[in-house]
Image (cartoon, rainbow, N blue to C red):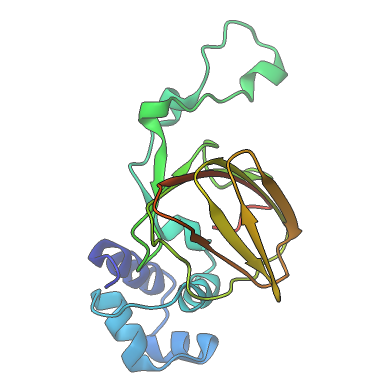
Amino acid sequence: MIDAEVGQQLRDLRRNRQMTVRQLAALTGLSRTSLTRIEAGTANPSVGTLKKVAGALGVSIGDLFINGAVDSRETESHVFSSSPAQSEVRVVRKDKRKTLSWPGRPWKTYLLTPDLQRKLEVLLNDLEPGDTSDEFYTHEGEEFGFVMEGTYEITVGDNVYVLEEGDSIYYPSHLPHKMRVVGDRPTKALWVITPPSF
């Protein structure tokens, strides 16, 4: 089931926009019953469904799943100069990373960039044997993946690519893609996506 806090956040966003469930249903093509269950945290919506709802509410899907918000002072480097370039530098400490969660997916995804408001996002996926994204996903932009540990199977369109430790892959994100862990070892993979799509 979807996290109750995420459902509450969706409800709050809808109400803040003075939008009824009926209006949101018309914008997304979803039923009022489905939307009510999502807001109540009693449904298990697909990523595509959540992307529709987030888009209709004018937010990124990633904004719904960021846990452990970090105070901006904790991600900034210590700036000792008034240089404009230095004032834009951000450091994300390993114990201050934000965690992103997909409904129905048990693995951990860490945001390595300070937030999702940049021109790219960098994600670290920690996956266990059997972890898989069952449905194809598409969005704008480009993706680059690098397997740090284990074996990762990436399906892009009709083609399947098995990546071992040290292998990398690039593809335009408009091509349907999904992934799964292969074998009995945990897998760790680094993803660079531009523009941010989470």
